Image 1 (cartoon, rainbow, N blue to C red):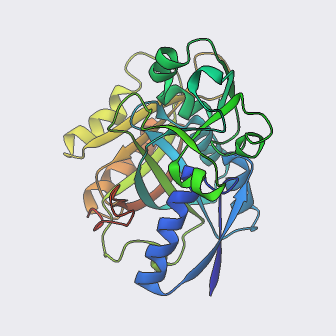
Image 2 (image 1 turned 180 degrees about the vertical axis):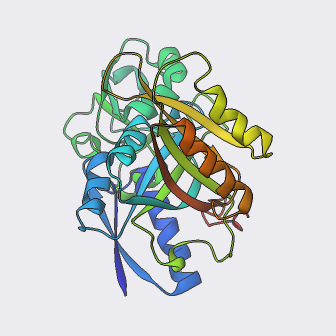
Length: 299
């Protein structure tokens, strides 16, 4: 059995790096083989999955410095059939890649908006006058660097190796503790083999809209989990895109959706919400920065 796994491309992105680690883990733990399929955007990766052009997608959902990836959240809300199977936590170390001989020769820097934001302080300090141009991914601009030695891109050291390009500066992210969480997403309820080999899951993610924007409307859903002793590891609002001031709420809960307490909480939550979507129940795999391998999953 060979899986097709969609991810943000071109090759060398952090999404591809996370997908490679997942493929290696999958092969070692289950014997399942996979082929990586790069797409120009996160949204296209998820739509490829929804359209049965891939069996899985690996997409970023949250960075420890810049917060949530809104495209991932918005697209998962729109595509009802997709479910989270696993979370991967990848350490991020940005490098400045360029064919320029020194920093003072660089006039333009390209990268994904998240990467640019994660290196904003470094850029202001060492390249205060350069033009910053956002791109669809960290690797999209790498192929143009050899043609224009006044350009640079922010990407991983692995990307520099893949494209055989020189690194002008390493570890340029503003904070050393920089991690991105990715979700492995499937179409509907996938086979158990796509998950970590445990009977229970450690996290559940859900999203909901409210019937009306009234005082205390959000307090009631939060009280449900508090009273049952279920910890929220993340909560975020996103516009419904219907009208100004209307929001969706995304939550990550440290509990298995199949547990009795969670079942009780979800049943009560439906009373206080307009639309409730369970995005998935899953475990978390931590990827080591040193060995580039998966550490024992959280459970």
